[in-house]
Image (cartoon, rainbow, N blue to C red; front, side, top):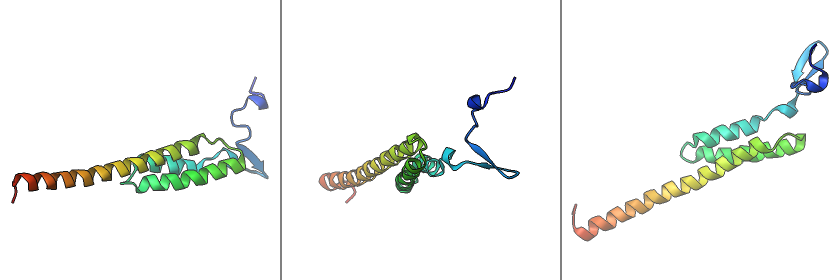
Length: 111
């Protein structure tokens, strides 16, 4: 009354070699996991750049092995959003600093 081989959710994820059970590489998304985590951490833009690089690696590996592209795409999107967010954040800092200097210089406050 067990599962038939076609109903086993782990079928294909593991293979027997001799007396050892080894995990099949096609079901793993190592670079994609790194990409998603780096994209979530951001680390002042460094995580976003790592997310983009590892997302591209994950995408290449997934295409080569026939695995799903979804995790690598999530990592790439998070990386791209992180890079755009980093540019916006640092642009805002520069704009805010230049606006503050212009305001102080125009009003004479602080001189």
